[in-house]
Amino acid sequence: MTFLLPDAMRKKKKPRWTAEPSLASADSAGAGDSSSSAAAGADRLTDLPDALRLHILSFLPLKYAVRTGVLSRDWRNLWKYRWPHPSSLDLSVAAGERPEDFLDRVGCCLRHRGRRRLDVLRIAFHPGLRHGPEVIRWLEYASACGVEDLHVDLSPPPPSPAPVGRRRPPRRDFFHLCESPNLSRLTVCGFHLSCPAAHFKRLSSLEILCLHSISITDAALRRIIAACPRLRSLDLRYCRDLRRIAIPASGFRLASLTIVHCPKVSELTVSAPGLRSFRFSGAYLTSYCLDNSSGLEDVYMSSGGLGSGLPRSNWVKAIGRLSNVKVLTLCSLSLQYITVSGANAIEEFRNFRNLRELQLLMVMMTDSNLTDIYSFFTLCRCPSLERLFIELPTNMYDPYMEKYLEVVEEKPPEVAFENLKVIKMNNFKGHNNEIELEGRNQPHNLERRLAEGTLSYAR
Image (cartoon, rainbow, N blue to C red; front, side, top):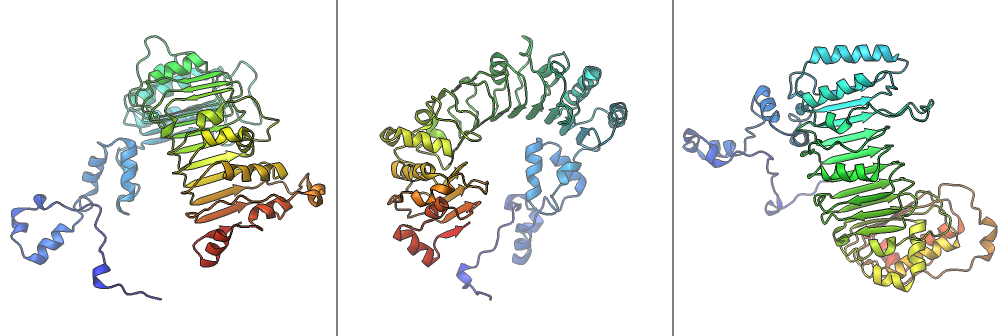
């Protein structure tokens, strides 16, 4: 079926690259109306020879060069060829390849390429104690070539973990080897990071730092963060030696903080007024201190699995007053904390007036879990909620099956979801509490909107 729009409603899509009238030549200005219109709508940049466009891309940082790929098909992937030699290198051991053969192959590749500009370097190799000097040479090579995105993974293969005490990296200061003036993204996996030396220079261009399976002390982390004045994103995963994470006020540009399963951490202090995204997964900490948390827009809180009781934690108070949060993800244990807080939660979560999306990660779906969901909507007002996603348990066996005939029917809260557009439940298996949650007693306004088609429901 084809719909015809009136002429007044037809709008021509404006080209992404349109030549300004001031750039037109005098001859073009004096041409007829049809010629002027054609010139004004021409895509002058795309019409340039490839050599000139590649020359323009060579002046852009990597992230901006990559973004030009959305302009048109002629620009897609053009950024990959802005340097005469491959600008992205992946130094990974092939399946069944001996370490000696791998080192020979890498050495030959680097000698042939020479010290030319490098955008991305990925190193995935477990050197042990014998081949540490080779890794040092690769890092020095990356720094000399002005690498912008560096990924170093020295973790041993999963089937054969390295013996204790043999996972340390080269003994030289790692961050001293990474002092590239163009380095904007750094990912480090699988070894020990010592505190940077006193002569350590600032990583003035680093914006994204990911530390995975790293042995690092609290002091070393603080010093590294202080040396990155432009840091926007910090990702900490499986850092087994961290105990107190402190983000100083110097990290005022930090917009995203992710902490995943750092088992010994008990305290978190963040003094980053620009923080917009906070994602936490693991055993809940004793103390959370987030200054200026009112700026948060995306919050993810998950215990990472089945929780045993409610450990002492102040996260409800610390993450509360999220007046600007737009996306909120909570697990079963998080809902229990809010339910136990009761009337106090009304003060902490008094109004999610800007919340657009709510995700609930249910590890179990017992009677108490159903009550926790109802309690959340009773205590926490979400007048602007548009999308509700509920991740139900994946296990097929319900340990509370024998209690189904004894379930006391819970009355769903009378909440007006005037702006709700999408409801989705994953892993629906037809268990009693899932059916109850699905809405056998749906509020009348949701039933009406489902019938009208203004609300979408899927499972």
